[in-house]
Length: 220
Length: 189
Image 1 (cartoon, rainbow over the protein chains, first blue to last red):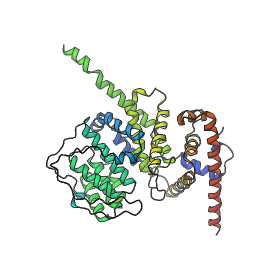
Image 2: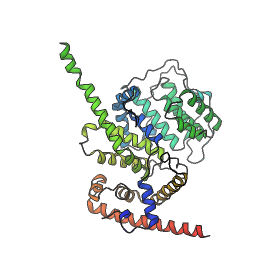
Image 3: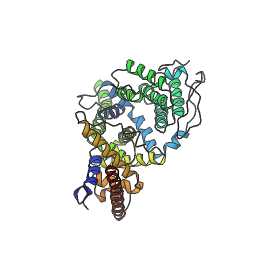
Image 4: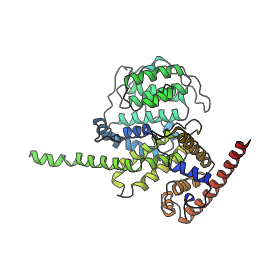
C-alpha cells in the first residue's frame, strides 16, 4: 500500500500531510531535552561537566521515567507516598483550593512563591542515586503535570513542598520556571513577571530563559 | 597490586561512557521523530518535549535490552505508550493555546505562518480520529513505517493493522474534505 502523499491525494491533503511530516521541535525544546538527558548540546563538541553529572543520575531518573510510562499520571498524582519532610520544617501557608478544571482560581500567594532559596531548619542534601533524588523528580513531575493540566494551585503547593524539602535541589531552575508558569496560570501575572525577571537576572545563560520570557510575555 | 585494582575498577566508567555515547547517538538520530510522533498523537509542543525526554530516559534505563538496530522501534513503542498515558489522564493539548513551537531560524514569516496554520489544521483533522486509528495513520502516513512494522509495534495482527489504516485514511480524507469545503465557503463569503 502506498502512502497518501504518493498517490492520488488532493493538494489540500498533501499540504496537511507535508506540514505534519516536516514539523520539528524548536532549538529551545531540543536544548531542554538535551539538558534533561545530560548530553552535549547539539553543535557542542564534548559533554559538559554538568552533562556528565546528569548522566550519572540517569539510572535513577530512568527508573522513575519507566514508572511513568507504565501508569496513568492520575495515579501518580494521587500516590503522594509517605511524608519524608523533616518534622522541623515549618509548613508554608500556601492555600490550596480544590482543583478546578476550567477557569483558574486565584490562589493566596505568599512571599514564598517569590523566594528561590528559602532556608528550612534542617536542609536535606540531595545526593545522586538516593531516594531523595527520586522523590525530587517525582515532585517536579507532579508539579509539571499540574501546570500542564491547568491546576495551578496544586502546582504551587507541590513546588512549595519541593522548595522546603530540597533547598539545594538538583532541579531548582526547573522548579523556578514551573513556579513562574503556575503563577501566570493562576492569574498572578505581576508575581509571575517579577519572579521571571529575577530568574533571568540570576540565570541569564539558562536554556529556560526563553520559556520564562514567553510565559511572562517579556520576550524580546 | 595497584594495577590489579585499576583493572577491577576501570571497566565501569568505560561502560558508562559507552552507554552515554549510545544514548546520545540515539537522541541525535531519533529525537525529531519521537517528538513529532508524540505531537501527532495529541501532545502540545512542550508536552511532547517532556514526553520525548521521558522516552529517552526509559531507553537509557533499558539500553542493555535494546538490540542494535531496533532503537527506533523501541522509541516508537515507548512514545506510543506515553501518548496513551497522557491521553487517558486527559492531558491532551489545547490546540489554540499550545501552538508556540518555532520553526527554524531564517524562515520567512509568511512561510512560517502558513506552515503553522497547516500543522494546526492537520491536528484538527487528526483530533477527530479514534486513538487506535490515529496511531496507525501517524506511523504509516507521517513516519513511513510499513504495516508489518506497525502491526508489531501496536501488538495487533497484520490484517487488523491494514484494516485500521484503511479506516483511518477514510476518516482523514473525509474530515479534510469537509474542512476544505468549509474554508472555501468562508473565503468566498
